[in-house]
Image (cartoon, rainbow, N blue to C red; front, top):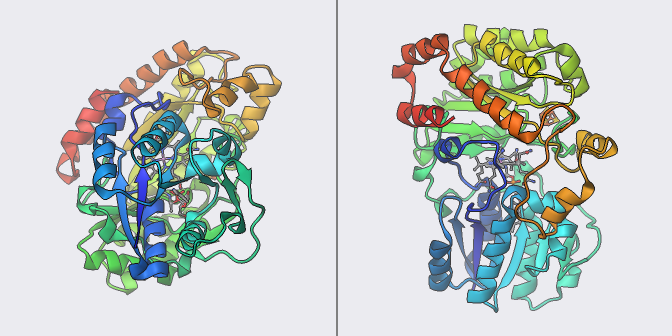
Length: 463
Ligand code: B12
Ligand code: SF4
């Protein structure tokens, strides 16, 4: 019987320096949903011919990883890689090679999806998989079990070389078995913005129809049926889960999605506490009222900036009026709001424009706001624009991605601000937002309704 290990890496060397450590530390623990999907799929395929474990190292260190590897001694290992902790991906692969030189090391996940070729060229593993892992990882296991040839598995980088494009159908989200809850201690899950525990995450659709100039979310869309969502929720509820956070980029991917889902929860008599990310342009008060009735407690909105011109320059395809309405509807429906904002955007020429964003967040009365420094990310429109303007050198990200520079600090849009100025401004906007007397009164008046108020308080203090 082959032993399989699905692994997230420790996060000890992240370049994610936008969030203060205190905020990141208090965000909570979310499950590695992608690995739980792969786990349940391969278990269904190979039943008793394999043994699977999932080891989530996100909040662990290398000695824990090492002792786990030595006690479990897996034959095939699948690592989920994030771009921001590439150094940890390399260290994790090295640790495995050192302790278990005979094992087969495969790497997938968001970093592999974005930079599969460059990852393969690092030569730190046997196989790189730059797409959804369920089917391909299963083919890799089959090849090992049947002593086959990995060249027959299409769509992978094998020892640095691509095996060719895949033909044929991929398994639909609706047809996948539900994530393998039993392979992961979900009781440890805690999300700073959740209301009930135990909680877990779910995905109801992949991809996004929009094309915001700062974002590289895939455009291929796949939407699950409401029936499949309800069945998954019933399965979770039967395991005692009380809260779901939907991780879709856009939960209201179709106009009727929020309404249909809320209706289905109510029709099936399901009591659930849940939250999701919505676009502001598709919302009506009627939808939000129904969502509240169906248990929705918090909605995340990507607002980004405070003017219509700015939104247009980001190709966000929303208006300030729509943003204001969405927040107003949410308040009226008594749903909490999380607003995401960016500072240092290409059209922000002075600190006043950043302060305008802060004031807009205050005006919207966001229950929470997260301000981030804008970083042009490779494979986005604004990254290419920054290159063309000479604000960024291609070599900067390239050196990081090719493992040559781990002192890398992601470059900002440096036309009007340097990173140091933006860091000072970021501290200021975060502090001004959370230490505003009106905000504190609002927060205190709702304290009794908050889950983990201490965690939230600690995170805010660390801003
Ligand atoms: C939940 C979440 C988190 C959780 C992670 C929980 C966890 N352990 O997975 C937390 C809060 C910890 C987190 C942190 C961060 N996140 Co985050 N996060 C997400 C989010 C919203 C959902 C992830 C998810 O569950 N997806 C659903 C599952 C089913 O898909 P999946 O994870 O991609 O897995 C599939 C494939 O990728 C592949 N796959 C995954 N792993 C593996 C492994 C193998 C071996 C194989 C073969 C395949 C494979 O198969 C899976 C099944 O189909 C995504 C956005 C999104 N909608 O996906 C961002 C996202 C993954 N995060 C992102 C970022 C940038 C961050 C942060 C830097 C913080 C920030 N500034 O936002 C940190 C970095 C953490 C780190 N390790 O360094 C980026 C990643 C970009 C990149 N190139 O790496 C994303 C894509 C958001 C975005 N569009 O920018 N995040
Ligand atoms: S920012 Fe949100 S709406 Fe815009 S493309 Fe990315 S996922 Fe879609």
